[in-house]
Length: 183
Image (cartoon, rainbow, N blue to C red; front, side, top):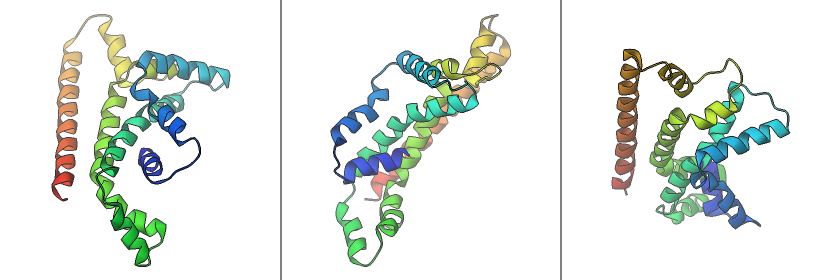
């Protein structure tokens, strides 16, 4: 969804484009606590019961702008004439998107997905505000356990999370630099 948002904002003009762009990138600027509270207020206003699905929806909305930003930065460096050439050679717009544009965007899409995964895994506030009773995420479980004191299993889990995050960040950076070298 972040990729489609980035492509749509980069390639098409429509009424209210600037307003949508400003709103789409607000999660980058607004603190997590404000997003968490506003999401809870919105869910309450529509009487949506809190569950694992509200956590997933909130994290998708939160991470959408990060993926869109990474992919849109890649869109700026892609030659638009390649897609036009594919259209001139008889490809449909969908074929041009899938066969020409998508392979060029793939490093940015993967990097954006990895960034979204790391941000979503780390986010405690949004998960705690949008979780229903009996629903628990890893950050919420860690928080509930450290209130009684830090035990060795939490230390081991912390090392594993830091290592996994570093590995994911390294993979994302390698994918991004490999994609830039191909040009």
